[in-house]
Image (cartoon, rainbow over all chains, first blue to last red; front, side, top):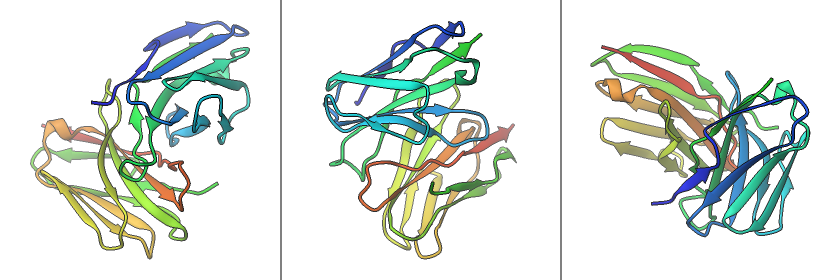
Length: 114
Length: 112
């Protein structure tokens, strides 16, 4: 079974703090994605990566950065957390070769910024 | 930005009743459509992927149909059970783009 893990299920941070969210997958997937999910909205893509050291901006990259130094790990960084970044963050991984790019989800991190 | 709409946003159904909900997406440049189920406190899990107009997929009491010409998919649940309570997400993939475009989901609540 594909396993995608995220570093924390719940996280509380203060405005202005630097926040690291980590995602690790164990299936050697090329593609990894970071989304945020807010009530009433679909998953919104923040950043994605097709390979090590590669990163692409999604629909809402402002206020975020990412790092992919190893194939299995994709980190989302909030340089200076703000209250409007309070959200559920979901990491996914996938490979183009399976099922029309099915994505496998981590458990999510619910981040609260005070 | 491509628009994917799911309706209704939420749905309360009596246990034993059948129900269905809709995913609408742009019909041009369609490549594939994914349905996921997201239960509370769990990760979303894939239900179906469909690619061809007229496709119908079935998994137990849950089935889905696809109309690529008009840009919609229906998800049906027959004889709803409490374990069907979840948010159902649809996500089309357009062309050969690696990204999926996510709907906001339909939250289904089964009343015993």
